[in-house]
Image 1 (cartoon, helix red, strand yellow):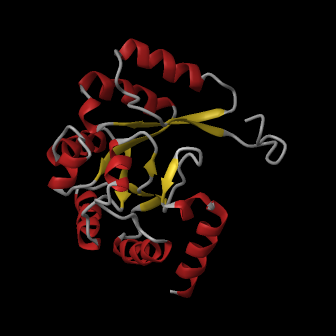
Image 2 (cartoon, rainbow, N blue to C red; image 1 turned 60 degrees about the vertical axis):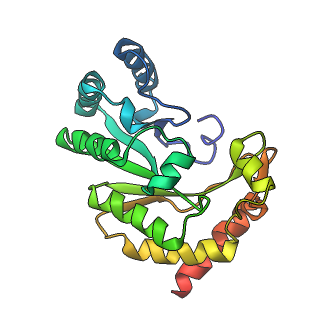
Image 3 (cartoon, rainbow, N blue to C red; image 1 turned 135 degrees about the vertical axis):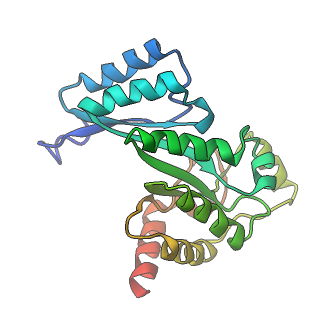
Length: 225
């Protein structure tokens, strides 16, 4: 807020609980954390990112309490619907768990965003189209499309360095985006079309580190279409 207030002195904000699993705590702990953010005079609402297998009835009741008084979005990490990829990334829950979590949120009138990773090892464009279609068929209100990053010190980095897979080129990623975005109906919002990892930890794809170039190239390509 301090950083942005000079450029937008009259702005209000959403508190984004992004990293980690932000419903994985006793409800009384969650309530204190959410309310602490909402008590800030410039915070108008919250966005909560979490795992679909970490939303129980008590959490749903708490989210409903918040929704009645404040702006609220919930982001679910699906990442992929391909079974072999689910096993590879050790996601830890089946696709039906994601579907049930989304249904439970919608029953309570809570806006649901779905996070998808593009470029996972051994996934074809068709696989990624299937993952997006799975989320759309499940009734997601919005999607976040995230480029796969290989970061130092991970099992993914070991596989990459051993030549087990290649990351997407910028040209491949833009071509994929064109295909996926054309599948999304006007009723579903697109909250993200790429992402950039920690440059100090990034191994690949290195082109993703130049965020300005990436976004400008994507904008130009989409405008041409």
